[in-house]
Amino acid sequence: MEARDFELLIGQNIIDRYHSDSTRPQVFELVGMEWDLLDDVWPPTYSPGGELYAHLIPFADMSSFLEMGCGTGIMSVLAALAGVERVLGLDINPAAVRNTELNAARHHVAHRVTARESNLYSAVGPGERFDGIYWNPPFLNAPEETVDSSIWHETMFDPAYTKLRRFLSEGRGLLTPRGRAYLWFGEALGNPTLVSDLADETGYRLDVLQRVEMSEIPEALVDAFPADLTGGEGDGGGAWHLHLLELTPR
Ligand SMILES: C[S@@+](CC[C@H](N)C(=O)[O-])C[C@H]1O[C@@H](n2cnc3c(N)ncnc32)[C@H](O)[C@@H]1O
Image 1 (cartoon, helix red, strand yellow):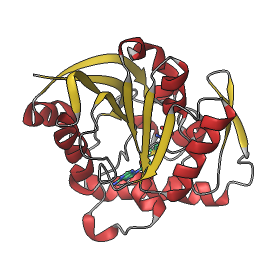
Image 2 (cartoon, protein in one colour):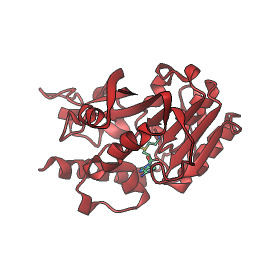
Image 3 (tube, helix red, strand yellow):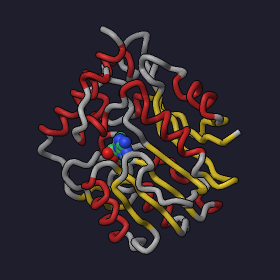
């Protein structure tokens, strides 16, 4: 099977699992705090991401922070709680915008967090600049012709990694002189050097802040992957990892 067909299959497995999941809570706990979860918003409990390592992002040095694809808005809220005065969460999914507002209110940082519906940076105002930009993006490079604009396809798939490339290249122009981009990402299945290639192409130096074995990922997501990618039995164990990456403009 072609790598991209394989990525389509993994994504479809996760989407099917989401729709048949009758145990999904309306409120969940992560990083020792409670969070609202609206329907049709990516549940971070399926695959906790960069928020587990938020302490590695230097929020104390930032006065502004943009979270792309904010989903439930956990990273936006953590940034605001860490003292960032102006936080902007963007998501193409209107439910995610509402969800981020709910969680900002729940944790008493609504005065610092704004959420906007946005296709990548389309809702960023002229002159807005950020000390940090972060995304836990759609990971899967499914064939373009198999992907539509439904919320769940937008959440899971990024054909040819067009969105990731734009996140980095257009984000560079929205950073303050000391600004950096942060990314939660795994080696792409069919292209393990993707992020370092993209960093070179878009003019960033890449540093790994945290590397996580796929075998540490919870059942809900691991089940969607074959065992040889997730550290199960066999030689290929642990072949796939997740990373919190810091990208500094060169
Ligand atoms: C894997 S989810 C991560 C959600 C959340 N940041 C988290 O870590 O739990 C990817 C998010 O990116 C959003 N997204 C996908 N394509 C987008 C686009 N073109 N513009 C803005 N957001 C997008 C999805 O709606 C989804 O909320």
